[in-house]
Image (cartoon, rainbow, N blue to C red; front, side, top):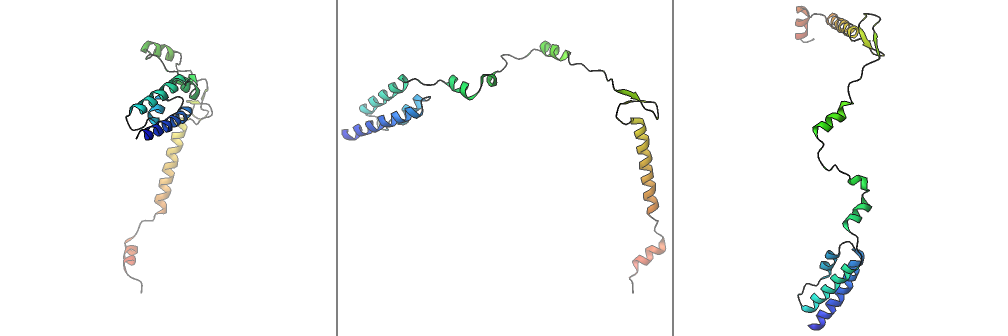
Amino acid sequence: MAAINVSQTSVSRSASAFISAHLPALPFLASRLSAPSSASSSSLHATEDSVKETYETPTRTLGSLLAELFPPFLLAVPKSKTSHSRKSMRSATKGLKNKTNINLCPACGSPKLMHHLCPRCYSQISRRWKAETRSSLTTQQAPITQNQAESDRQPAV
């Protein structure tokens, strides 16, 4: 039985060395993964040795890993909430700007934006178009007389 434990510890040491070489940032996890399932004193001693080995080797910290993965400007966040007065001071400079592209409509004389249709003239034109389309639809539909309705009901011989 002792020979089995010795072989397990030698296997666990080689596994520990392999895992710690490939997982330098996670020494605690590497030591947990390489620990054998039996709780004998020799296996505990081997686990302690592997833990010492992994902690003595230089490892990367979480901060250095984050600095490599994310540039520092991505991690910048405000330290506290922006106060109402500071928000209002920032937004005070963003006031409404005066329109400088206003002309008078040559047809009706009302003010309009340059390169745009006059709203007053457009409403008059659209009303006229709608009235014309309505009148053309009513003239196209002839009223059905009573004779036509009776002839439609009788089957053709």
